[in-house]
Image (tube, rainbow, N blue to C red; front, side, top):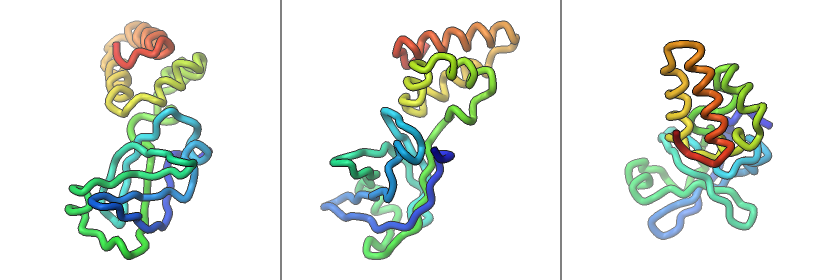
Length: 153
């Protein structure tokens, strides 16, 4: 499994008023199996973010009309792309949080499937604890909530 960052060259597939950036890799193989892959990065030097989709085993990122208009990218040219998993990832969490999630696989899988907003809120809640005891209690609570499929506290 990779580090959640991939650089590649690709062409955009134009469809009516939108385009698709087709990935030359399977993000489940490259970054680990997840229910959802929220990404951020650049395409042709222009910032992009969104949720990857898969149809028939082909993974892609949909680029809407506003992005295409603002990016002003030549759809006939091969482009340099860089995509990375968005938001807090298991490997970037504090050691105590990472260890607690590792000890409860269901909680970890659910955490990794959450949109960035919810992952950031959990991490912020834990980091705001002023006392080590409070932090430990919050980590335990977070793991229990995640194990039970709760997006937020």
